[in-house]
Length: 360
Image (tube, rainbow, N blue to C red; front, side):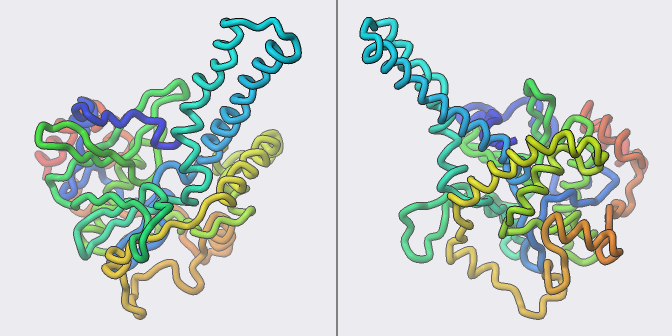
């Protein structure tokens, strides 16, 4: 789901639930270390990860297109009541403006980033500068070297990272969010890192946070392989697989046949969005800080590394790429079961981590 659909709370205080479920960069929040499909690339200096919209932007594209088409009802009502049957009055004028009021904000707010915006919005976890750089929007009239619009966040214990919870009509979702606040503690900026998680996947969200902390604090050595390296050049085949796997990674063939019509429709949505957008451009200042050595032993993906859904799945079937690669947190003395610990952490993070510290 597009993170822009979630409440940011700009101008207000950080939500109470988020304050309680704050994430430390120096203390593991669970027993597991694992990436679950959030990575573009990794090397000794930085790791590029996705933001939540990449995995399922086809849903939002569909919503924006439907809202845009619905705007046509306004001119149609006006034509019907003032030209075809010229008996319209004030009520009909108001009715002709109603679609604009109902659907216009959706098109205006979400449309520009999905059409004529950026194909993806990378977030760079930079070990060398101890900062996070997040490309947010396309800069249409940039000067040479200026690049797109980037937000920065320091990687320090004082920075506010939380596991944010959003309760929607479609279920409860979690994602990892960074907040920037002013001197009064009011939120000025907020952005999400990585993918989103359903209510039953909180364990995986904690494992993902541990993965990023291990990288930023200790480097890429001994880090488990990512679930996959997402492609930066999405082909129609990748658009199809994004749409297909959105209905489940291990769905039986019969069920996949049933959902094939919407899968093909969503594939078209992604292709339309990608065709109207361009790749992001990092400002020269950040690009120069991100130059890596040509012989960096940890630079991935490299020659022979699968990129994208199709190549990765085929490589796993051949045994050339690990499936479900993960690690355990060293010296973890708390609840060893990831799901039980996640349930306890969601209920009371302080108590769950206090129990872990008490047994250390």
